[in-house]
Length: 412
Image (tube, rainbow, N blue to C red; front, side):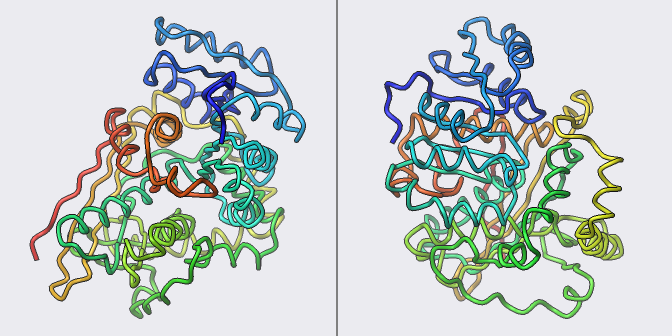
């Protein structure tokens, strides 16, 4: 485990990128002023510009250190030895993130990133979980907007039902009710390059619901014929739903959390998780479903990827800040308790701001939770864990930072 005598509490790697800048701003404006931190990257002048921009945001805070280096294994290894926590925003992670994971696992440095790259996460878990656990390094991939809200919603619903009814949960249906922000250049680069990095079979294996779980899960219930054909489902209190953009990585992450807490007994041995996105009607839902289906099939073709790269944001770019600030992020979910009456609870996760702003909040507050709170992640002894293992302490910090997470029982 990273000792307190290291030079920094947090190092933000990739601070000059689109997501990195949001993360740096949140650290500067919201985290304790006694925090020792640094920004890291390859370009001294760009890092200095980030520091100059955030200085006026909090005059009580000491300016962060600046660490310049490449993404070579040697430079990253030296960097991770200087800090207790490394936050990485350097994506695509399957191209640039592996040296940081290896170094953090080896040096006992806690690690946080915002990836949603299922094949890469599975690869990292298989190769480095044992080393990270042996060195008590808490490793939290998928701690950004794409996945952390879903994981926290599921954990909160399960915990709430356990406290109210003393039973587990049969299933949770979660939907991205509002996601306004367009993907950044880094996110799009990930989509375009993942097919070059991994064979189709390996990508498909990583999308299996329990691919990240530490124990086997129950076989999923068969979908109704209409949902199989159209991707559309209607759920009372949630409305009309369709295939979600982040469904696969979030399902595997939530199911890893399921397996980590008392080998599935805390959530419930018959627990099932499904994720969708909200749409106005069945017609729109069907169009979205097939657009995603055929879109991913098309991107698997090299000529299509080559052409698409000409018309999208480049890495480091994204939606204009003025526009992103008007966005709203909202998830809604329903959990069914494992009781004869099938009692239900609902959750609402809300943030007023853009997706990448929220990602900066999620990663920064996760780092503080690891540094200063006692959590299940610490009790588990490190290794590749999940946002849910940071528990209520993490949620409390997020609420203070502007996140709303409401849980309540529903009438039958």
